[in-house]
Amino acid sequence: MTHDNMTPKEFVYKRIDNYKDMVESDPYQLHYHLMPPIGLLNDPNGFVYFKGYYHIFYQWNPFETKHGTKFWGHYISDDLVHWKHAPIALAPEDWYDKNGCYSGSAIVYQGTLYLFYTGNVRDDDGNRESYQCMAVSSDGLHFDKKGPIIHVPEGYTAHFRDPKVFCKGERWYMVVGAQTKDEKGEVVLFTSTDLESWDFKGPLAGSDLNGLGDFGYMWECPDLFELDHQGILIVSPQGLGAKGYEFNNIYQSGYFAGKLDYHNLTFEHGDFTELDRGFDFYAPQTTVDTNGRRILFGWMGNAEEEASTHPTTQHKWMHNLTIPRQLDWRNGKLVQHPVTELRDLRENEVKYENVTVSNQREAKFSGVEGNVFELCVSITDWNATGFTIGIGKNNRMEYDQTTNTFTLERLSFAEKNKVESRHCVLQKLESIQVFKDTSSIEIFINNGGVVFSARVFDDPEDIGVIFRVIGSVTMNVRKWDMKKVL
Ligand code: FRU
Image 1 (tube, rainbow, N blue to C red):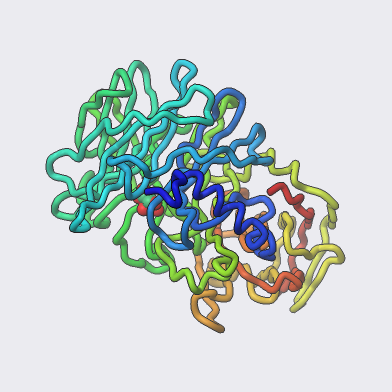
Image 2 (cartoon, rainbow, N blue to C red):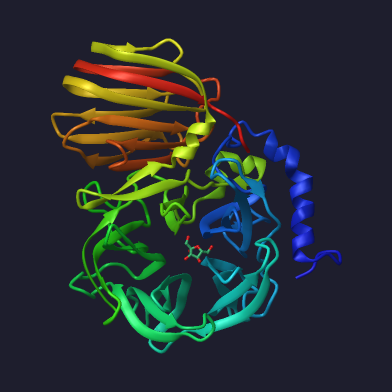
């Protein structure tokens, strides 16, 4: 693939240059959420700490605001807050990845950064092939592709992708998202002692395995680790139907917790729990940093969307990543906190302590408003049946004590004048932490116990924040503007 004698990478750099002004003139361009310089971004890939820098790569179609041939874009940071673009890490220019360098992961071994990813190939009849490939780098910026290291094993279709590699004891392990020939989603395991030759060990979890029952036709983007001695498998299954408030997006991302047995290579696990209850969250990936924190990035998108309905496509870009979130195991479940480094973004603090709002429809606090901000509300006394925070005209977070339901509402951007909502059951509302960017919102409820993520496209002038209470609520309210770092 060359364009006027340019390599694919050169062609992409030229495109970035050509459209820089168009992207930057978009009022929805994000201030602190990672987004593509042009084109469509999806999964976070290769999240790793290497030689003093965090590296986050991302699935990227730089040519269009829809899915297609994927590159690996690359951002680096020394503090998880201030990010710089690094050169394009992987381009789909070899026979084994010519239709896309699909998702994968990174590890560091003896001073070298290793990437593992899926080479996606379509033959002349449109049939799919997939290869698990490796690339290496000594400086973390320039990558040397080593080609395929794993072919699809017997019994699986070419929907076999997204290798996540980690080390345990003397061995390397790789989990891969898979589909069996009879269309069941699975996560399969490989082991290695040298990172180059890999032994296939079979499925670790999947639809109709470990007592799970029917659970989707394909499992994407697995991530396997231990947190506080608990085995955790994060995965993104496709093909689950909605179940009440659960599984309301087309595809889901969540986790199974259980007991990982590295000797027998088994994983006894419980139910699947969604990681995020909002509209736009998929294909997350984690890494452990030098402080031992397990940190997650997710994609703030979900499956294929009609590009024409996405407001940012008029400025030739689409989608972003979440903020980095620290994972912890608390009272038998995963909780997520924005990493503490994000406090560096705060400025112009506005603070109210122990303020009471009683039976008011539109209470406002002077200075608590904006387009890009962090808001922390912690409830010190609750004597109410309903509590709502409205952000802009169209976004509403509401807790209904009578039904123990928390709701996030936004105005649809796919369908005109349609309000859409996501819900979860919540026994008690204690705190809400909101990260609002120009066109993204992430809401952490009860100290990270539940999270809702969504893209929101308000009029940028529409900066009001209102509180509505049925009954009486006393709370501490803090709000900061957030610096623009991108
Ligand atoms: C998940 C996914 C992965 C695949 C990648 C392609 O969103 O479908 O399974 O590797 O996106 O961009």
